[in-house]
Image 1: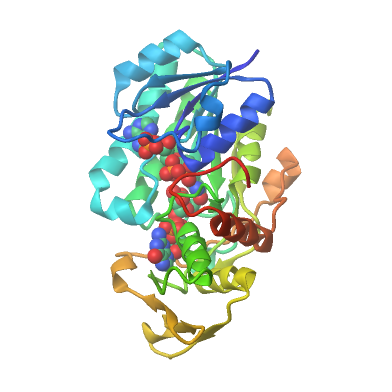
Image 2: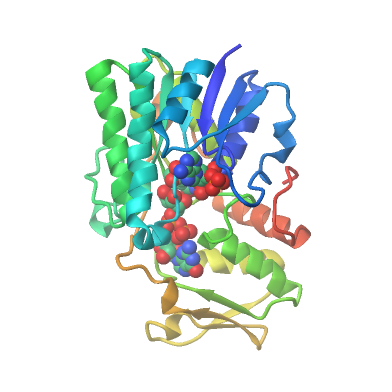
Length: 345
Ligand code: NDP
Ligand code: GDR
């Protein structure tokens, strides 16, 4: 039986990956951070599984990682743990680097020092590209230009993984994943914020939705599809780096439109100015407004991935087009208004 070690299991991707690996027959070992509130909503349904073992742990604690890796002796390590919010990284840049950049080197170094030979997955990101329009569509050959402390920290972790591969023969792969969403997406990311608000507006329980930059474009996919790509990378004979994306790009404004369309509520954008452009009326009284509070000091304008290499080498491609993803998210939010997640999607 193969053993996987996961950091970030309580997050969106960690929860889907744990389900995926359990279905493949793996033993799943994972670290949980101590918190004053419960953080296991997304994985409560797998925590009692006989092949799931959790330990208190943190990417900021080298000795903890060393002890756990020595004890578990994993066949595969998936490093998904991170301060993953781009806007927040401008406010806590040092902490973001501590976890996302140095946390990765701590994990890599513990593996090396212990003489372990697991296959290693690093959760790299399209944020490393910076989304300059002239670089789109972005592939594995596109130059990096991070536009946030998060992107810069993730770039360090990307190169650390490449370096341990070249210097010590680590089977380490970077998945350069473009945005991927689901009903389990954190509620401060734009898609979940929109689908939740749209569901509540359609039910007459909310009037206003305040957003930031509606013109930013993202290549959005379904997280459930994307965790398979992580696993596929570690099943290859040779480690490598792969862009994982849908190959399509849409603006935040278009995402809002698609979400309202699921509910049948009509939208009517009004105004021409920077802020006014974002103002729209819904059913006469409800409005989507732009609040500069959500603007970022530097924005990533256009993410549009070219997943050709993943398709050719991993045999991976998107199964869930964006319209289906938006419908899955909105319909879930129409059924569930509580904080938390259900494994029923
Ligand atoms: P989430 O924010 O949903 O989950 C992040 C996870 O990291 C949580 O389990 C969190 O634990 C954990 N974590 C945070 N800080 C630490 C720490 N100091 N030590 C250990 N664990 C920690 O992210 P996603 O699931 O969306 O993303 C997974 C990974 O993929 C992240 O690294 C993210 O940066 C990256 N990524 C995500 C993309 C996306 O579109 N979703 C695209 C590309 C890359 P807790 O619950 O305790 O906070
Ligand atoms: P992103 O995701 O920054 O791409 O990072 P997010 O959903 O936060 O933002 C996407 C785009 O929407 C714009 N936006 C808003 N964003 C948020 N959060 N809230 C708003 O109200 C809002 N209004 C407009 C943003 O400016 C941005 O352009 C995600 C994370 O999962 C990262 O960890 C991951 O690496 C990247 O995706 C790929």
